[in-house]
Length: 121
View 1: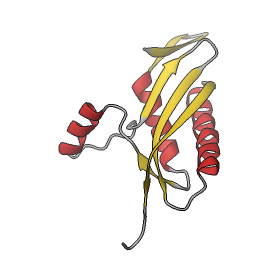
View 2: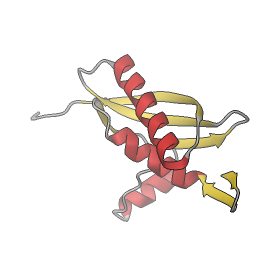
View 3: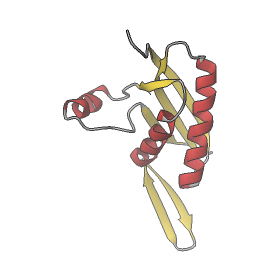
């Protein structure tokens, strides 16, 4: 499904994958995030095999009556406070989608799929 906005000059339709890519790129800028977990194992697995980067990996976007619902599947860095990472993610993704697309998010759901130890080990 896509998000459609109407302006005085016409309609603008934005594909959910475009919104997912922007949300994923915003999420990757957040402190404490080690990476995104795949939401579609088959597609993301093929992208990995082909050495293609998928910035929308771990992001699912759905249109609702009030705005967008964004689901993020993440891997956090060991030793970070997960509630703070989640709050930072919500703020960053919401701000980015509002600034780039002019779209409000109704909710941002975060699912922690793993913990990664960073550094020399």
